[in-house]
Amino acid sequence: MLFGILEKDGIKAVTRQNYEGMLYGITYIDHRTWCVFNGSALGKQYSPNGILDQKSRRGYPIAVSITSLPSSS
Image 1 (cartoon, rainbow, N blue to C red):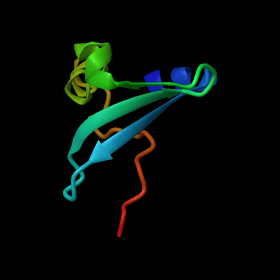
Image 2: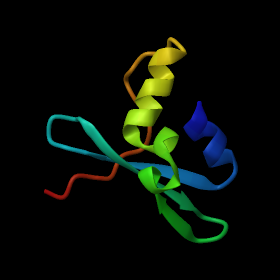
Image 3: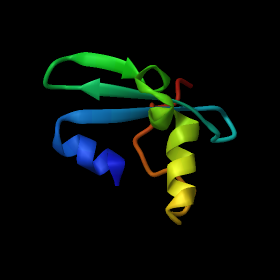
């Protein structure tokens, strides 16, 4: 939900995941102003743990459905 709202405002959330699929980073890219922010730099609530915590408190499934970087194989 959060990422859909951000996309409407021209902000893309890009995730970083390890080989097991564990989310360890989120980068927010504002395509209107060309600014890039690390989620944890914006505040705890925008870090991977903050997003997962908010989803679990609201009763949403924990699976995160956001765009991830293509693997570099």
